[in-house]
Length: 230
Image (cartoon, rainbow, N blue to C red; front, side, top):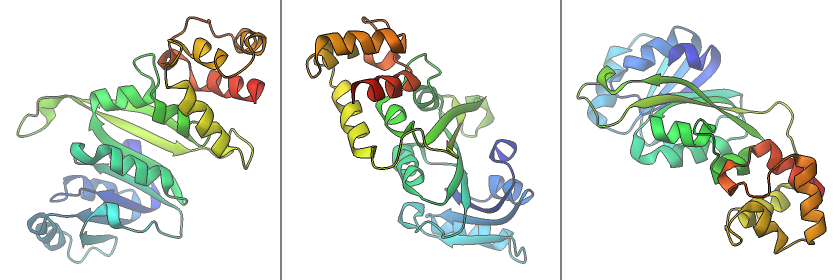
C-alpha cells in the first residue's frame, strides 16, 4: 500500500486504526494526517506516534474533513462499508493528486474495468480521473480473516481533462441516459434520442459494435460517441 501510494508532501489517511499503515506511509511522506473515528484506536495511535512531527492524529470522521488548500494525496485501508462515500469525497476534492485505497476486490475490479466492463461512476468520472487496479491482497493477510479478498484501487486526477470546460453537465446527462438501458444496448438507447443515421455513423467511427451492452463500452469510446453526437 505504501509503495502504491508513493511519496507526497501531504497525505491524508482515512480509517487509520492503530497505525500499521500510518507508520509505513510516514516513511515516504513529509506529513501524514491520520483520521480515526474510534476513540480507543485514535488514542493508541496518538500515543504510538507521540514525538513524531510528521504524523498528526485526528479523532474524527474523515468524511466530514475539509480538503486541504494545498495539493494532497489520500491513502488508506478504508472501512469497506463506506467505500463509495470515501471515493465520492476524493472525486470531489479539488486539490487531490491521487487516492490509493484498499477496497474489496470486486469493487476495485468493477471500478477499474478489470472485469472487461465499466461502471457508471467510472464512465462519469473518466474525463477527469483515471482508475487502476494496482494490486491484490488476499484475505489471509488479515486477522481476523474476512470473507472476501481485497485490492489496491488507485484513482488519479488527469493532468489535462478529456472534455472542454463547461461540458460536464452535458456529459453527465449523456452518460446517465446511456446507462438507463431503455433500448437494451447503448446503440439502441441512443437511437431513441438521436437520429438513427447519426447514431449508426458515430458507432462506426468509434468502432463500437452496435450490439455491445452498455457496461462493455470502454470510457474512451463513450467520449468519442459524445463528441460525435453532441
